[in-house]
Image (tube, rainbow, N blue to C red; front, side, top):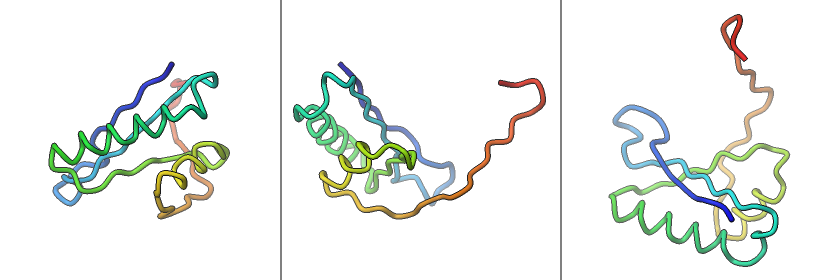
Length: 92
């Protein structure tokens, strides 16, 4: 059906209370309230562990993920344009 997780957002003491989350559902499991239930569980677990901020990094082309996060009350903080991943020669 899917899964959800969170982990460290960035290193360093400035982000010690910030986590990044991911939620993945197969298409058949979407629009049934499972995503919201998973998000509620993640938020509760993160708060229990002392985290104060949760970040979701969403690719711009994923309109469903953007809509989901808006529906659960998330705010868009930034849009990164023209990101490039540089890989060492020979890496895929």
